Length: 241
Image 1 (cartoon, rainbow, N blue to C red):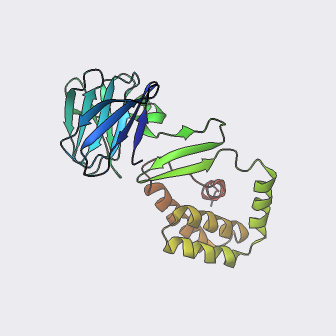
Image 2 (cartoon, rainbow, N blue to C red):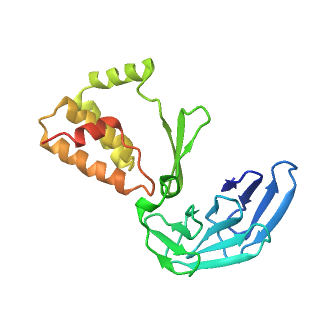
Image 3 (spheres, rainbow, N blue to C red):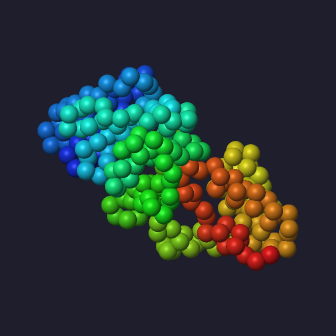
């Protein structure tokens, strides 16, 4: 399913990249309750407000908002963002957020005009949405066109501790080789992990530290959501020089 959103009693899905419609079903009866015709495609993102009474749809260079009770389009906010890959409502319902791969915009729903984004005023789950599994083990973090899955309990089990010990037994050249392959594939998570271990094994190497700093920056800058940083990377990066 290209994209889904859920309220207490409604499930919705966005249909493809050329079909300009949003379809909603009742989760109790399984019956289709409404189809919203969208005059612009492709639909890239969807979000309900907290009460489920309004729906925001991210489109090329605009965000549209519908009333879920009447099915009437309420507002359209113009944007300079080519692809709005994520939308969200502030809990006060007075601000709508639109996010591209590198840029965020927000609009006041009363005036319809762009407004500033004060991170301190926005819940982190709106700006950096994360979905926790029911058992609390896994966390899903949207990142551009991908979803990252992280193990919240990583490091606490015997297998993880054994893996940690195995990494320390590897040689610095081995980590360097693995890091180089990861960098060639723009896998900055793996590259930063390997460079950090390379430095921990050979901590006097200034070149390795500088390379780690560069890779670490690419990992942070290449994510629209809060990136997952390996703990060993954080430890090395924060070490005093």
